[in-house]
Length: 453
Image (cartoon, rainbow, N blue to C red; front, side, top):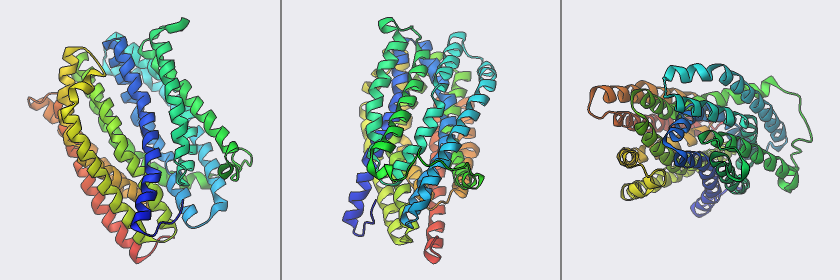
């Protein structure tokens, strides 16, 4: 990481940090996409079961992972203010916290999974696949959370290519494990969609193992003495991370959970074909979202660094660059999605009913791309300022007071049916983008008047 002074230097640094993050996020999402695609080839029941399982897991993971993402602005501001001696302890305390969070998730999940699935009143086959897919996935939760902390530690220093290379090596292994366990090849048990859960859980442990090895092998990481110098667990350190991370996690949870909530409602209200088409469409649009999400994470790194160095004007310049880049790219993607929606659908299924409905879902997805780009990038900027409480409130109101209820009403009382939920998503994302924009203006004015410490 270095301080860029000219626009040319800023653009260069922005994209130097961005592209490895984008590749990394695509790889992470590719695991879920591969689970969905390969499970779909095993059968519609397997596709629907993995869809339900993913919809229950993803908001939980993204919400709690938001707590771990607090590592990025914490380390970023320490780097900007040149307090390098505090970085090692901050990372180790975050690792302790990540393991505790993972254990809590496993324990609570073990108690509520069966009641939640029973409440949904799914078809027996879908219920079975969803339950055991999540059980398989749970084998890797501890590794996933711990490796996320190390990832944000790497990223905050600008070393975003490290995690990119780790994921590029891991995704092919995940695909191979899916092939072996879903279809029962080379003597492995034929588990269908359930096998995708175990394959991904094993892959998470591989990612953690490689991440730890690199902290010893790379000189610029070895100097921090991670896993060599162990610190006593500190509630004070956890409190700092939680005070930033919980609002971040809740903001992310409210956004992710509206998509999962929609999937669950569709699972209750409509048939298996609709569930499969909806989930396949969500799966691909989630892959698209990796673009603005990666820009958001890049902005958090750069803005936090400049705020730590008290260069508020430079933080504002990065903010403008990031938002314009996100909206420009997503506008192009929306056009491509319109023209190639059938070809994309064929990657998931050859069932004509599922394909036809999926293409209709894609038409609605086109309309929320710009709002999604704006809200993601603006929220990333606010995190760089460590401004997280008001964005959490904005997210709650936008997604669950406006978006989700409107989606339910449109789905029940209009001819839109399941597509009404997607109109609610569009409205929620637009409200969030407007709210984050207004909040950023306030935060930037305060920062200019009284630079943050």
